[in-house]
Image (cartoon, rainbow, N blue to C red; front, side, top):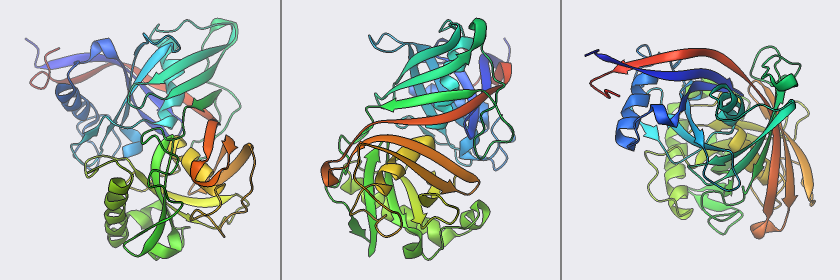
Length: 363
């Protein structure tokens, strides 16, 4: 008997994240074993993920698991697992918008969806959250392509565009736009806005945390008192939001905002939450965009806000910009974001078999 188990996989970059993509049928079906398999695959628990294919950062250890959907609306079920890079922890409760851009192409690669002429539209259901997404992928003459002229900040070069539409995003996890019922909450003497649009996020002003909000990722990651302060507020905010004890969960996420410096709408430093994101998460960008447009939130005075049904918000992050288009009805506490649209790119990096010790799972 072989002492390693081989599992088919695609290694894909999705937006500014990457990780192994699997077909559900090739993995264990119970979550405890699944978690152990995925931690072994990426090499969790080491700063370099030296015994797996991760790269030492939570944006490089993201795992989409795909299958054909039985849902009447959807084509593909997207089950997302956030595997922690530095700790042996997995989170099955959240989702990822950057890796969502890889779901459509990966589904075509796996034969779960047949490519159409010119472009292929794939309806995706997020198993973790129940969210619905529409992915539009370039498939000229029925052939999936990765090369193209679209560019996104945080990724070198250009690639074929993937157009993503996010639906059912208001109150995605808590059922409420503002889960605490307040535009602002005071926690540990600091004002924050707790908002749930695609992803629940706790949003504070950088200046209130003793930073400018323009620091590089490495400088922020070395600021241990900052992370301790954010985590204390995050844990308390989660209880106010009805999420309970989230000490082992990445949701809610955390973001600090500052006035724009480069012509954008708002400057953001985003946390995952125990590391600084190199750029910005697609899911949480929608929450931050909605916050930027909500009068009475912590963004007051940092951005020009207005009422309207459709808005483009340009968010500045450490490596450039992310543009978010919202269909948004601003009614204060009862605001509704009908959907959001974001452009991403993706690329297949490798494919084949990934090996994990048979002592973890014999297959």
